[in-house]
Amino acid sequence: MTSIDAQELLQQFASDNYAGICPEAWNASEDANRGHVTSYGDDPWTARASDAFRELFETECEVYFVFNGTAANSLALASLCQSYHGVICCDQAHVETDECGAPEFFSNGSKLLVAPSIDGKLTPESIRELATKRQDIHYPKPRAVTLTQSTETGRVYSLTELSAISDECKAHGLSLHMDGARFANACASLGCRPAEMTWKRGVDVLCFGGTKNGMAVGEAVLFFDRKLATDFDYRCKQAGQLASKMRFLSAPWVGMLESGAWLRNATHANRCARHFATQLAGIPGVRLGGPVEANAVFLEAPEEVLDRIRERGWKFYTFIGGAARFMFAWDTDIERIDTFSRDLKECAAETQ
Ligand SMILES: *Cc1c(COP(=O)(O)O)cnc(C)c1O
Image 1 (cartoon, rainbow, N blue to C red):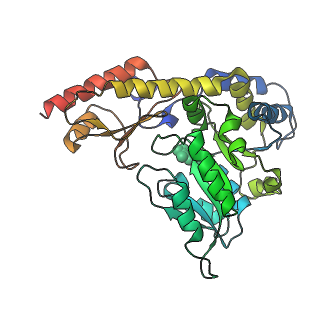
Image 2 (image 1 turned 30 degrees about the horizontal axis):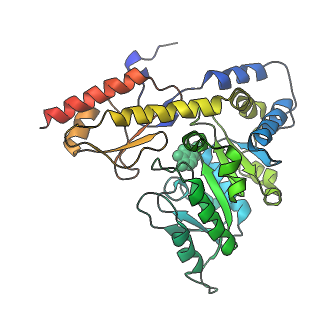
């Protein structure tokens, strides 16, 4: 085997999915790699992972495991809608900007009704506006709302905000879906129990992200309104999302949930984001693009500074949220953040 250049393995902050697999998930996969068990989810690991979710969320929810977030979101939304329905989302929502039309595809045409936003959050007002804008037969009938917690721009909906959104949904007969690709980061940020942020606030379906939380692959779809899960297993199978060796999707969740790694990982990532943010004060021309509430930091900086940082080998994206985005993961090394901050300071000083 040829080895990979050490330089290429250095930590980057372009995305939280650049990180590897945390020990708890890895060890559980290894445990699951003993002996033979039944396939397609009819195995003890999948049962144990589902029970661990029910215990964590303090409710008898229906639990499914799929390979990625695009599938989780799309199939969950499809289960809330008929093809002539509409799904209200924020203009920054991953379902709108980063899923290649999968929500429309898997729902056979349910249209995303996009609410403009400044900070990547839906509000009760924006939901009301879209839900009541048209009542006629020529426009898709609003049927569901999707919000992202924590958001694509690194913000977190407070429990009060979630309650207000949920009340608005109820007023218009809309189901509520939560894209929780970074659910754990939001939980760590609010310091609340998962139930408080979901079904107790009217969330009907949650996609709980494992990948960015420290797993190799996999998201869990939790139906708190169990009726909505009818035939969801068929939907998964048809979409190519039913793993035949399901235990390798579900066992890592056992490791993550039973050990508490899901929350520890997110707490660490959030702390790293705050640590980085505190180092930005006084760097000329560089400022925070918004409050740091989860594991993302957005920077506004002159193009010249960003170019110089790239030249020093740092990777990051600028197409999300209109600023340079830096994401922190379960394994982020504080010293590596400090190295980056020093480089950033030097680059900013060079352009003065
Ligand atoms: C990463 C992410 C997803 C999942 O993306 P996949 O690449 O399909 O796994 C979903 N929603 C948000 C907000 C994300 O950041």
